[in-house]
Image (cartoon, rainbow, N blue to C red; front, side):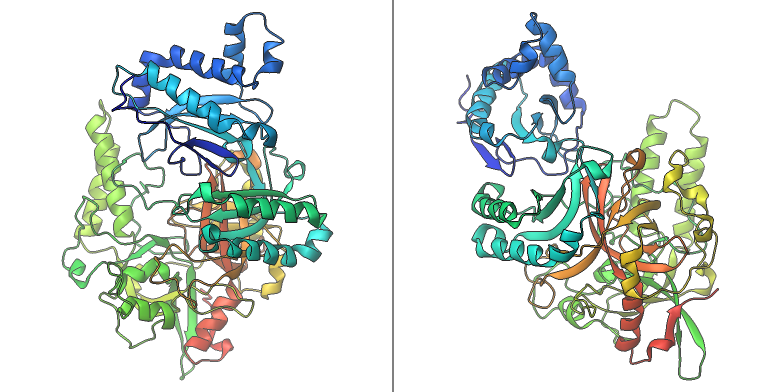
Length: 604
């Protein structure tokens, strides 16, 4: 074996998984790219035999082997199994964004077997290296429990009075344990309670304490904290499982991969309404350079217009403003590219900005945002280049988008005020809002969308008629959120989606902004209302990157909350956190020195 190309195998262990360092980012995506196809074409049969024989040697297929006299037949059955009760494997790339060939083994969790995983994987890695020794392929190995890598579903816990009573104390104890250990104290992002398991029937999945960690944390160092949390949960008497993983933050729309599923190919719209894509221009110079460079360099963040609100001035006149998240427009302030503690951005993160402050380097907002424009152009050019004919529709779409930006029609308004990231609700929840003055020519409506924009094959996900094509209603009290079982959202990335409300508030920490920004004011844990995607028919995720700012509303068409953060847990499951809309409007009034009655959902 070529020792220069294949150094000593290093296998590391994490939470219910082990593999070649570094471990794969979550959520797992079984991705077969051109490099992987080349490996499979040349060596699939050899690799399958090596993998199967090694798993058999360590006792993973004892039951299966007892049913078959022919080991080849058993191998075929083993590879094609993919459920909660069987071990299976995939030969794939590490992720959509990264070509790293990987043998991924998924198996039911057995704590007694876990002790031999590292030994078995080290042996398997050496055998795989031998198979590929005379090739350019470099294949890593990884093994995980079904809970980590299998087809899992998350839902809220709605039928446990004992947890309604004790969740707050359980959550606080778990937090205390995490913060007692150096490897986890700084790294946790979310502590929540959900049902999590392999069944699409929510009630069949166990109630689970769900913890997510920073992508930068070292998973192999979590063991002491994990053991202590597991001991506590066993002694609590609530029969709770534990899920602990680091999920890769969903990246912005990917310019380098023109098949990104979040690319918006619809024509650019003249009017900006609920759920429209929005972002801040990078600099004032962008106003003269109307069409952004189509290489994707320097484009802004991407978010969603929540809705329109009205603010009453001293003369009694109501004025319209667009609402989105503050963090969506942060790139409008100097300091995004530096770590200086005295930057303008750091100031606005902590104190917010008010009318007349003029702290921004650009005040212009755009819809569509520059990021989504560049992604759409890249996708359309890719399709046209590889089309064998019949590309006239794609060409017209490309020309429409370019002419829209060439004419400067994307500008939709100017920044007015924003909360920053340090203010909190009365219940210690996040406040993350920004207002912009809307150009009259771009003013849309506050009308909720029709049922036609929901996936047609998922009728159970659609809102009732009372929440379709109706003016958005005023918010009710924040406490009413506990009585909402189903919520709806319309946004820039995942369009129209449906989710369920969790009555058990999660601890959430804002750590993705960089170490110099996560101080005691911004980085402290908040108590957040969580929504999870409905699992009917493995429907679309509730939220992903680009959806921040989205309006969450109920079946009566009333504004419930403003989405500000979330995580994609599996390709079909996500979490989203939302601030109650009543708290958003109340804080806008307080921040601007107005009575609460002077701020309302726009009535038009």
